[in-house]
Image (cartoon, rainbow, N blue to C red; front, top):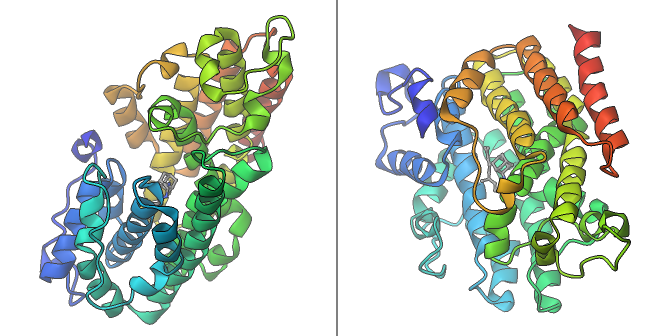
Length: 379
Ligand code: RWZ
């Protein structure tokens, strides 16, 4: 939780700062604890949000974390998981509801064990905020359930064939988060009413963050037999030294270092597709606390893409941006121009590392040039 040190700390339990919105109710206190427990990086930026928005986004986060914890748990059989996922938006407003059926090693099982406190707080929320959270929850659970069901049918872990499917999956688990956040910013009056309608841009910011995590976490996910990298990207024959039959199993990637490198660069270019939309989105934000909330993760993401690019360590161990680098990015992410300069800096670093022998070389150059031009055009 290193960025707690760099963001001014606010005591979220101090009632006088927040008027009568119930910050010191035991159930709300418990929701803050669940947020602290389940998010490594978001808890700090959420707590910095203006006034009651922090509470609303905290609850949004914990609801989606609960849903995610059901989707994630491979020990729940499909015939239990399906109805549970598809009714999660109803459970979320059912007083007293909780769930004890997660496996013992599920990291965030406590969120669902204590879920009745989340329900309690959600039912007290202004209807406009509650309805937005429920609507996003309903869309996300349906998408997750469809993907989980397909995986169960093929008795395989989740596998994604095409880039189109990969985009759809990321839309469900992250693009919808962007949509929900924009609607909550609008409905609470912290941002303009029109932000709620910028679906393409808010979707892109979520996709950009999610895809960066999927690239970085390859090794961790593979160990748990979850494979998000689409077959269409890792199965290309031109990534073989001698045009050999491409790997039929994604784990063979690790046996073929050159293929691993090219596939990794193809994944990075794919994520970069969303970067200019993400920058466009940040430019629409007017509230400083909302800006920081969106811009800090975006700056971390572009730095993480640069860290992953052409880095074979990523396949061996978890890699992370250095603490000092992260602190620097947090302090710089205060306005859209500065964030654009951060994007430009990392796009140049990625471009400089690209190899002309990489089949993706041209696409990398184009993607990096687009970020550069975005910055030149706008600032
Ligand atoms: C940030 C308010 C945990 C909610 C969703 C996130 C679980 C899969 C994880 C809710 C940045 C990584 C956190 C892309 C949004 N779905 N993907 C709030 C949540 C990227 C954040 C995490 C998604 C998400």
